[in-house]
Every structure is written in structure tokens, then in C-alpha cells.
Amino acid sequence: MKTEQVVLNILGKIKTPWLTLENMPIQPTGAKGVKGVIELYPEYYSGIKEIEKFSHIILIYELHLVTDPQLEVIPFMDTVTKGIFATRSPKRPNKIGISIVEIEKVEENKIHILDVDMINNSPILDIKPFFEDFDNRFNTKKGWLTDKNNIDKHHFKSDSRFK
Image 1 (tube, helix red, strand yellow):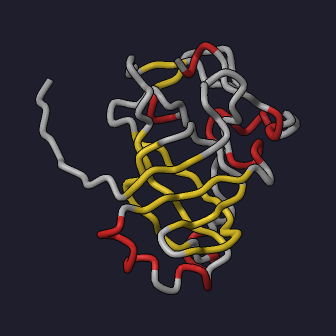
Image 2 (tube, one colour; image 1 turned 90 degrees about the vertical axis):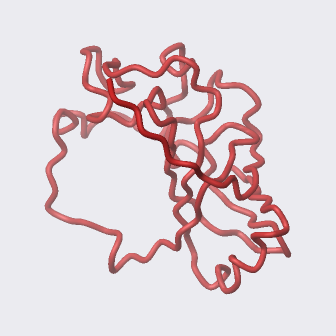
């Protein structure tokens, strides 16, 4: 397998109440109202100028506790193996997580956020404003999740598949 590398800067850390993977929410909808703080390193502070004018942001962060990436996994809403790129499993080759969170307030180098579904001290790689006119899509296909509409997705917690 050919491997090329990209170097990314860590902008800071995401502080959350989730100290272990056990029973951690696995989507922001399962972490409704749970508070966290993005603590940016000083050299990136000016990059959040006017971020407080948005209600939500898209966080791109490292899934730094993933030790065993896999190309096939059993996702949390199924019992059958799927390709990693057809799931949101954290066991990804590039260990990158994405979450949309709500901004509660901004204080200097800290962005206080709600709906945190990432482990404490996750390295933040990028922050983008959520803009509903560009970021929402309608009339989309749901793939293997089509028949999963009646499942209560708000109460799923991490389990042994996430270690």
C-alpha cells in the first residue's frame, strides 16, 4: 500500500467531560447540551475573530485514541460489517473526526461549545463556521441507514467497537 503523508498543525485542545470512551455519546445529537471548551494555542487566537456571530461551528479534530484503524467495521446501528468509508466509525485510517457543535460563548482563546461528543483533550485541527445555506442538503440517499429511521439515535453510547 502506497503511503503519502500530510502534516497538520494542532490548533489547541478540546476539553470535554468525557475522560474515557466508555459510554461516551457517539454523535452530537446524543450529547445535547453537554458542555465543552476549545482552548486554542495563543498563536491561533486571532483566527477566531467574529466566530461568536455564528450559532454553530464544524470541528475537525484528531481521534487521538484510535490505535487499531480498520477498513471494515460493524457500525453502531447495524450488526453487519461495512466498509469504514460507509460509516462514521472512529477506527479510520486517518483518525479524523468531524462534529457540528453549538457556540455558547467566546472568551479570549476559548470557545465554549455545546453538544460535545469527543473525548477530552482531542487535538483540534480546524474550525469552520456552519452556514445553513451551504451546509444543509435535502433529498439525499441514506444508504444502508435507510431502514434505521425508527431507532432512537439520541441515546447511543460508545462500546467496545470504539476502542
